[in-house]
Image (cartoon, rainbow over the protein chains, first blue to last red):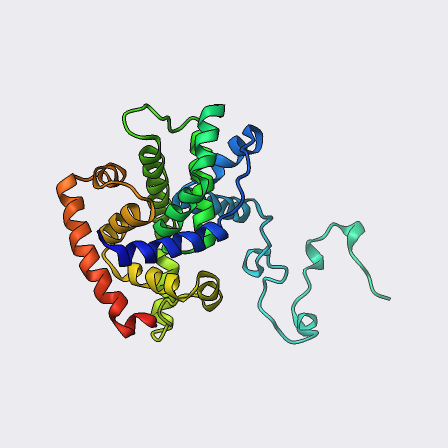
Length: 102
Length: 173
């Protein structure tokens, strides 16, 4: 038989035995609760994390964009007081609304 | 858990830890995790001893499968990250025996552990089961779920290779 290897393995065995954790009787409660978590596949975990990220992104309140705002000034810019030179359209108003400047 | 089973598991606890330690390459934390998961399987009734083999043979088979599952789970999780890190750090240091662990083990035991890591997995498993655990070749074959002929081959080749490695000074790295 291989005495040299047996001796070496016996020493390794002794060293491991000294490092072995103490025997702790198993308790059914926490054990059964912990088991499923350890069996969770990484693919499932990643899929769940991706689903949560998408849900958060979809449910987050949308910020208004500048392009979506209604335009308040939609006519062409022109010189200040330029409209004074245009012909008055007051003649189209009813007589009681016509402003007469003194 | 059945008291009889619990008593048997307790009597094998240290040997089972040694086997778990071997199955995860000597990493103590992983060995404790693997052993705990194997205990959980028994406690939850996911594995049952049917009496078709010796109890120790059956229990070591459960630990071995649990270690394989754990390794597969970690590998699939780490593939992307490890690949990325390996690409980023081409000069990543090779795995070495932790110095504090080496002191704890003693020089000879640490050298043996290092040499076992260099053997093909099946050869190392066979030698561990036979020399460390004191199983027969038949029992080792049952634990490893392979034929007795293959185990005998792994045993013979493994012994020769292990002796060479233990004699070689480069094994001290």
